[in-house]
Length: 352
Image (cartoon, rainbow, N blue to C red; front, side, top):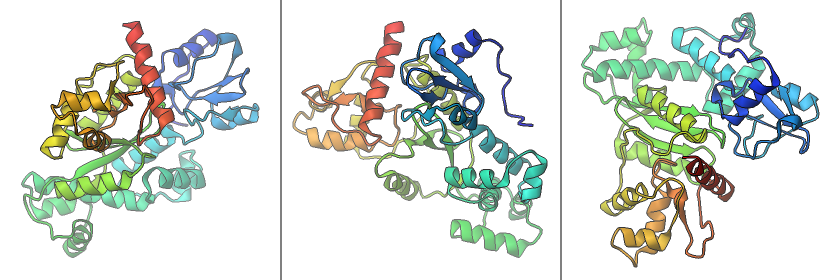
């Protein structure tokens, strides 16, 4: 039994409303097949919603494929079961020392091969590596708050002091000691336009990017170097807050993000990012206009570079900057996604 599966409403009208309203609670548990196009989509897909009489509802990717539908190329509904991922994460959080063997997973109704494949695809690491990283994160948090090394050792689930010191040094490059900086925490968030990476601590959001954007690795490595803090899998209240805000944004119900941000850049970059955040939801500006906004009308190329490297997609809305000729210009997340974002914001602005 999937403890994370929401109860589906009864009746075609209620099911249609889930897709009309972009209810991401049902993502991974309900799909809509479109008779006229032969595709199937997730809740929140940016494509135009079909008429109710052309819709078929399926509770799994397999069911949709067996019915003859093919996956939508805009919302990628076959990209993984988020409910399953959350179930696995909960097991690790509640029992970090538990070995997720095939038998353990089978008792919970989980296919081991599917779980391993999807977990590795999402996090780039195995169950065991993720659990080990989470234990080290707990230890680092204890030390950052002034706790003793012994307390950190116990929080990490180690009986042996030497084993803990070795594991900690392997993870962080230094021996455990009081007052070490708290790690940054990385989590993967599902959205109707693709998976995103969020990096945060308890106070602010440091990075938010689509996982398939160009130079994603360079952004990640730069952040880790500038902050001088390890980045471990996990989430904070900030992570939950941005996940909630993203859900509202993609549902057309939020135009201004309220999440606290931690940016790192030159004075020029910061001035560009500040100007970007003044572009109203549903509107665009050219690169030349953006350069004028910061008082550097000749610095169009430098503005474009700063625009592309802010590291906080959607919140610092670089997608709202277009060419002087009205063309989309560039976007590290892809021009199709840029157009979809602009269409989404234009549509939600018309409703308000």
